[in-house]
Each structure stands twice: as C-alpha cells, then as structure tokens.
Length: 250
Image (cartoon, rainbow, N blue to C red):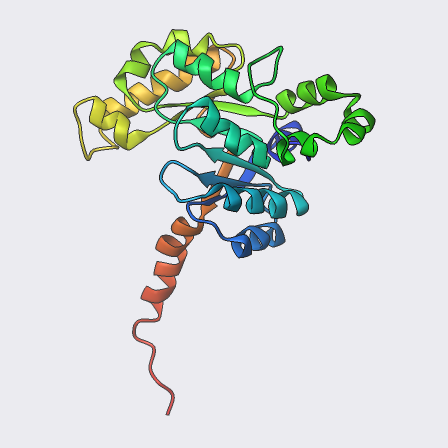
C-alpha cells in the first residue's frame, strides 16, 4: 500500500488533483499518471466496475504512485469491504441520511479500534503477508492504524432527511467529511430537474458551513478534478465545433 496521495498533497498545502472514471480503463489511469494527476476516483454507484477491474485500477494506479478512491454502489459493509480489499483508500457513501448510517459507513471503512472493518487477504491488507506487515508497520495493529490514517470517509448528503439529521451525521468521529449530490438533493427539496435552484444552493451552503464548523471537510475542500466525460463533453466538443467548417485541401 502507498501513502494516501490526496492527503499527501493536502500536507503540501494544496488540493489533490483527481481524475474521475465512470468505466474501467487502465489506459486512462496510466495517462492520468503521465500528465500529473495525484489520484484516481471511480464511481461505483453510477459507473460499472466489477471487483476485478477495481483491483487492476488500484494495481496500476498505485504502481504509478496514485491512490484510488471510490463512491461505492451502496453502504453495506460487505460491499465496502470488497472495494477496500482491492486497495481503495477513500470511500464516499451515497445517500447517508442519519447519524447511524454515517457511523456504519465509518465503521465499515476503519479497522478496530476506530471502526469495525473486516480484515481481508488482498492488496488492501498487503495480502496478509505477516513478514511484510511486521517489517513495514510493526505488525497488524500497526498496519491497521496506518490504514485508518490514510483513509478518507465521506458521507454524501443528497436528501432533505440528511439535512435534517446533519448534526448527528457530523458527530461521527470517524467521518472525514461530507459531499453533495445536487440533483437528488434538489429533487428531495421539491425541485426535480433543478439542481441549481436557489433553495438547493442555500441548503448546500448551510451544510458546508456547518460541516467545517464541526471540524469536517465539505465538498471539494481536499480535491479538485476532472474526468473522461467532462473532457469529452467540454474540450473535445469545443474542438469538434472549431473544426466543423475546415475545408478539404485539394
């Protein structure tokens, strides 16, 4: 395992630069390293990532010195563990609506004594190689503490219920911070299809302010990034538009 490269960037006084994927592509992971991204983010909720693909992305990403973080498909402990066992070093839990759900998320991501994460035998625990664990971390407990210190645990606030229960959510010790989900949040506030509605924006600003006051991160406090979809629908679209009238040279 490598040091969490987002947290390392933060220690240097800057945001971690993250490349986002909604589909498996080792080519894009490798190219992200070539241009200088700090980390890879995968969307397991709306993307499509079998565990073998997550394993390969972590292998290549870590090999190039980039941590991999993920939004998981759901918040079940077994599902989160499948991601963590591959080597994921940051989990965003979707649709966290209560303090109990936030606590369960943190428990699934953090080893005892800070949480209840199950010990596995994959990359996420150095393949349970006792000799390496002893030499590098001083044993399994030393690795558990190191892993917890290099884990980001983020609750996605995307429902009015979560806003109503925000104080309970923010009271969870193992939670790094919160992030938003503007489309679903707007819908829950009675404004479907209007993620930029003033009510949604005001609610998100309130959530972020209260999160920071509670010592948690909010939104993009730790990272900035882009992804394949943004580049294709932004810069690539602009390129196509600028060349629509190019003449053929005869």
